[in-house]
Amino acid sequence: MSTPEGQKAKEYIQSQLKDCAFIAIKTHSRDKFDRYLTDIFYDANETDLEALILNGTFLNQEMLDKSHAVRYE
Image 1 (tube, rainbow, N blue to C red):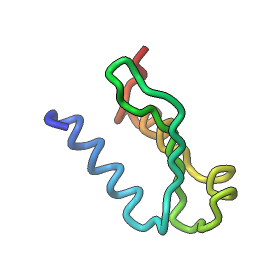
Image 2 (cartoon, rainbow, N blue to C red):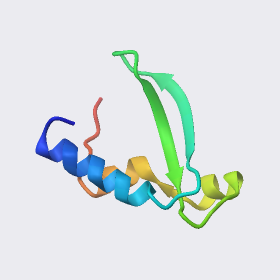
Image 3 (cartoon, rainbow, N blue to C red):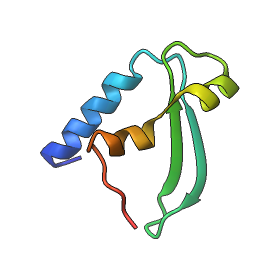
């Protein structure tokens, strides 16, 4: 978050999630630094959890597609 790219990513996420009633966060494991790895789904117009996961926007992929994140392996 201390880089200009990190700040742009943070601002993008804030703008996308600001009008969401809720978001779905699925935690599935931890990385080698003991941080949780999660899948995040959102849709400002959806309030049903199952519909949100099936039809919402997958934030992780969106961040990659918009070059706000890079795949780390």
